[in-house]
Length: 368
Image (cartoon, rainbow, N blue to C red; front, side, top):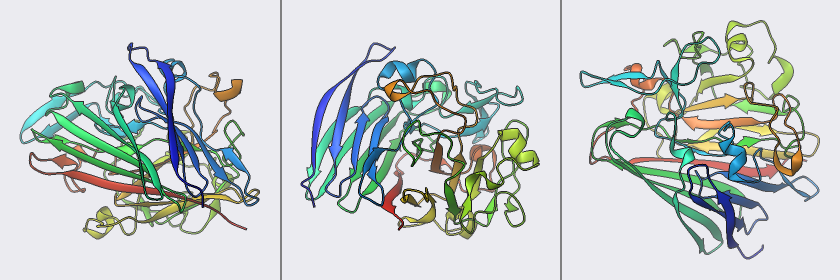
């Protein structure tokens, strides 16, 4: 076991004129993470294959300019509200709130996506790195003012990244508000276990601990139905190659150009009616040729899987490489999209005096 450590360096200046830093976290188990205080962005993440060889397995850019010139949310902290809110409108306690409705894909139907025009991913956060025994990590803090992107309430938020000796990347989210407001945070890292810019992830194998998903309308907003995955291309209850059915003739897949959907986790609140008190198994992704694997464990009720179907592939990624179609997979733990407009689903509304608190773990390993 190695001694955990960190170092701090300059990362550049954002388009908002804010100076960003890069933190290199050297985990005791061998995983190495480069992360910025600019939206908590994961710049690089090195994990071992079955032969112990480290390689960067996340998609991203070498500087803030990459994200600023067309951000696909590579590796960012997402908030105040992750995923979509239909037409950028929700009602709360009899009052209608209007948010920026900027996302028009794929049917010209606007929605509020990932917090709006400038979500929490586009701010430089206060950051304090730490070493605690065999753990190394960073505590990020940020204050979102009342009215930020149309959302009510001043929100004080803390996100803690921790790398453990067991090669677990734990993300702990906490937030408090002075007015009732919806909060639905997630991490938008994209994995490719061949290596960054390694090509499509269709040959990765995925398993999801979910017997149901939420079908969408032409604007990729959940219809309100919860449908069984059995007999559909969304059945990953047993391991299946991601590309095996991704191009099947299916309305939902055609709308999203692939997987960009929300699975209802078997042991999550949406399926059981009870909040998970500690992280439960949500699923895993494996690249069989080199053995790299991640398991996702979470206290959240849902998992949104996105196979990079809409990203700008003319962008140049790290090392001057060009990204390919379906170049990464995002495993976004969260509440279901458009939950503020679905009162029968687990609520995302947080009251003053209540602490919003969730945890997700990315457990890295190998298969032989």
